[in-house]
Length: 177
Image 1 (cartoon, rainbow, N blue to C red):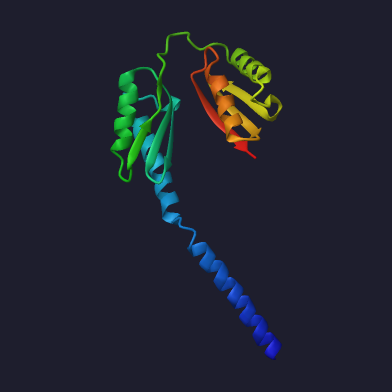
Image 2: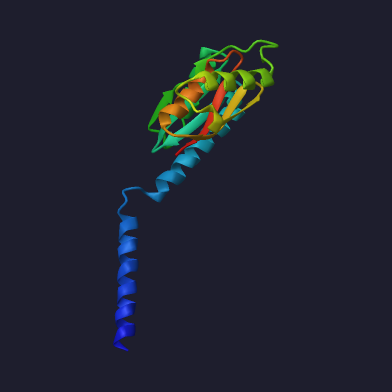
């Protein structure tokens, strides 16, 4: 009977230590929920706005700091996107990294050509292992998937893709191992 009681106490102790470790990570679960709500609210308001083309703008939020990336057809569109982000409750700061890239009728370069060119440029680069990265293009928007050894390699792949003619924006979904 004492072995059973002792075993129970040991299990309870281990569980209590595990809970204490989880409680003291310094992160609050609510902060993740708040950031996803902030991101969703900003994207929703951009979509509703007639002054912003939300499809070319990516919104990320971490602890209330919003980062806007992608492309805008004008400086006014970029500014308006920043204003929308600043107006959402919970936003503490906005980093507006939107590039101004005017769209022209017929400006989309053939998507298959873009995909081929991006893959060729990555293959030629000594800083990127192109065999681990997939490239897909739709209406000038390049999506990179796969894996990279470092964040630097992942960022370099994005830089290479952005430099290719006809690329409107890049969605980097590369996982760093």
